Length: 71
Image (tube, rainbow, N blue to C red; front, side, top):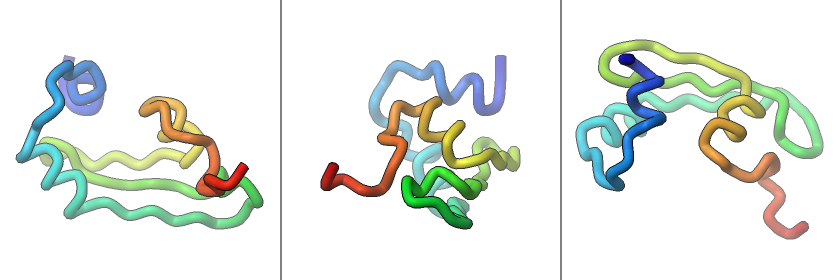
């Protein structure tokens, strides 16, 4: 297993090089939607480019489905 699959299954909490690569290449585009679910996210991990819709990304990493933290 490699690429994003390898990153998802990592158990340790500190991966400096991967974190820096991810954050330095991160691009998020919210196109519309009250819950901020519509749009896409793109980034590089281990030199590989990834792009997916926001709702899939939020589900994979267990993030809230909305940027609205007041509800």
